Image: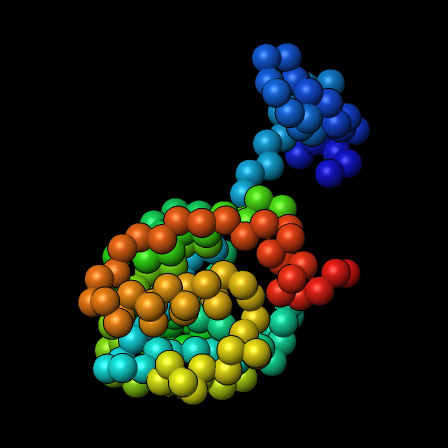
Length: 185
């Protein structure tokens, strides 16, 4: 960030008085430009014993499989965002069953909020998906999953399904986890 969106003055990067971390500051008008984590909301759509996955048509990780998810928009709830992303990526309607995984990714300023969901009717590839398909646990393309958050959500689901209980799972993907998943850049 180089210029203030309020007055156009050049910004500095410093710790504001009374704060504990550096922020973009406008010394001309006094505006503090806060940058906060982005929320990724999505679903784990289930139909019978199968889960719905989408093969990504966009970067990052184009061609890899994911659950339908994306950035939350202003003026919507996390539930609305999760259902919208499922419609956009899988042309599918779902009934949400509750928040299932909450995964922090502090190294890239994201929080994943994934909801268990019942798939209602059909599905098809949306503009951000190359294809969409239902998978039994043994059919999941584990080596072709796009993100560690997706792998973790699916692992929790299949383990919990064996016990018949689906508690909320809260965890974090560290930079080290990410490097183990993607390799070092």
